[in-house]
Length: 348
Image (cartoon, rainbow, N blue to C red):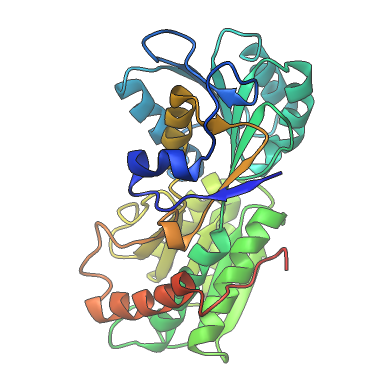
């Protein structure tokens, strides 16, 4: 599959033609065009879980909400997070031609979409956070290892600079909690580890997997165990299970780093930053490209730090992280953006 990289996600409408490539019109079967003369598209979002995770799925839904505000017809189908049969039924129910585009994402939906795409060859799909190689699927991926690298830098600074971070004991211990032991999560872990070690190779990193993206109670237990081992900071990459991680952070009176959406205000005074993938904006871009007839199906669009496709946000907690720390993290970021530093990946 051909892979594209957007120039900058922040300059959304300016770079669509360049980033998402192609000059094909709506008559081209490999490109998506508007189904009606006014350019309005109908977009169905199939979620293999429930909204309200304050993270991954909510971020994607934010893109759907923006599309609806822009005049597109949208709907979202939710499901039991432990019921793949329901995921399949929901995906196939909106693949029969009543929707111009069907959006779905997460690595857990890959096999479901791989089965549906050839079964409904005339249906156009946008798949985020992974790659499904099919002529009617436009895939979107994110260099989560790069964003996690910055989270690692922040965690390392927080556990070593107790004057700037008063809840830190200076233990030189940090943790990372994944929802499941799968490639996309391991990519976060590898990037996070590299960021921590770039600041201080002597810092101990405690890695744990909940085994679920929807069990907040287990997320809490895993986080508590890591804090009990002396960690000053935990980076949560656990979906809905991460809600429990953040609660444990407050109870331990320590720090955490959120993920996927801005979680900084979830536990005020404890969430140093959140690593954003900008899933919602990337979906808006893709649908706008489909509306213009420039979205190429069967290909991949990839986002990284260089195009502002992901990064850390300190919004809502400006008093928690000193500007001097933010400036230092920016220095690490610029090394990645310039190409002077290549962040390792789980795929390496």
